[in-house]
Length: 184
Image (cartoon, rainbow, N blue to C red; front, side, top):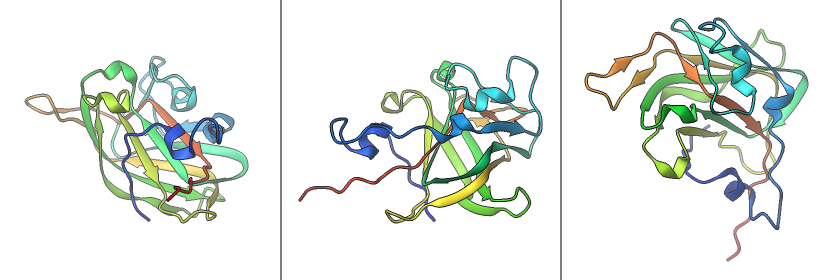
């Protein structure tokens, strides 16, 4: 398993618009959940509402949030996006992503690490972290549940650094993509 940070649009990963269409965001058919949320302005539903101007915010660390589908899904790409409204803030959030078929037994699919969301990079249209499962083409993760555990949230381009009281996520997107074959 490896983490791959990209600054390309999902369309680039899927090939040209004429060759393929962007696959559906599987998160939209899931139920979002979290251990806590910081009031009605930062609801759990914002984790997958398709709107990067809204976000979920938890109240503690560590904090768990995720998605649950009625039946298992196959996927190989997860995007964790920060809110567009953050503007020029750069965040560092230690997190780990796990999957499960039953909600009891969990498997790490994205390693525990500090992930940086660079709001000052215009190429990412706000801060987006792309998690490529590092799976060869044709091999997919199958799961009914995805769980993201965050342990800290630091705004790194303010002096002094600002520690937030809980995690923040603007959007979780999940895709099953076909990796393009590059022509020689």
